[in-house]
Image (cartoon, rainbow, N blue to C red):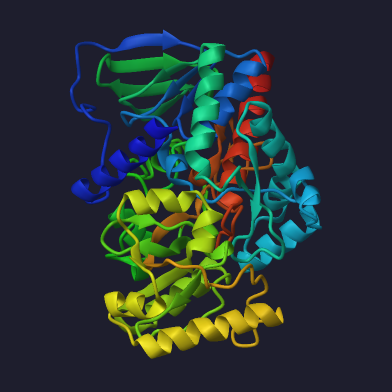
Length: 483
């Protein structure tokens, strides 16, 4: 597991050094004439969606080649820390949590400001449990249930002990891909989706660091390249209000798949819907998972005061933080929270946490009034004891903050997820501007649009990449058999 966490940090450092934009290392170095390869399906992108699609398609009998422009696989999935949202699971039942896909649907539609595509959303919530069990059947062990912002009930499934979910998923899917003999070409950037005279997909062009120019002939192509959160110009083009924002995205998330599909007539939807994550370390681009708040942490401003229901939707919490002095806040928690969430250990290793044995000492280190901070935590603990947050309406009061040492990390919003992207249907087929499927072209994950509406709930992206990755793989395999 350690190599996946290291890989995620390498991508973070690349993003900082490259200013958010990157191409495959050596992608501009062309070695001779184009080499031709032939397969049934080409998957562009080796993150969670692409790997889910590849493994599923191979299971269905298709031959698959996966292209990954970065030097390591995983994409933004490597950075996913929270978990996978699924409702009505056996893990929820074991914890006494009553939930259902209908409640999951209602929460997501509300969080997305009713801009979600109803059919795509229904597909997501109805298939999330199966996606979870599919991963667990391969050893993912996503059995730890926590709550994320905007969810009525705890339904975010994380690895046992609360470790980061993304590296676990990547490791699980990579192992399955290797066992099936799926070819994954890293440092290989797809540059063009090829079509015949009738608009049907026939393969892709790519540039490989090792192989030079490639032409890969295929009967179907699955686009799983992620969003465009690491392309500041593209972000500003579709949402000017986010110009200059930092990003949590890995440096490869530059909208390549969207651009390539648009070039052959694909439609896009809701491109202006770009989400900020509220708890990102300023100037570091490192996201602090929502599970920290879900496990019991609170937010305080530079006056040492709470100012928001910490489990509100990401857009609401982001706006509230930006309205505070300096546009930042402090995520505050105690050893009790840390003991219940392994993901925090990675933040400690990265030296992101300010630690103190007392709240007064912590306040001094943060430069905020000690008396105010102590009063804030005392008040919060009283609300926990009462079982009701009469100050800000937080629904889930997990635990008092009273076990030393105490911790804090300064946070601010950063570009996190692009909800808009390629238009697809429930079969993960990419649609043209007339709303008709482009024959042989499929897409899954953050490269697509419409599922999350105007605002994505934490834990839904991980569900999205697996649910629609599997659908894309299955549908592409069936399409290949019909050719």
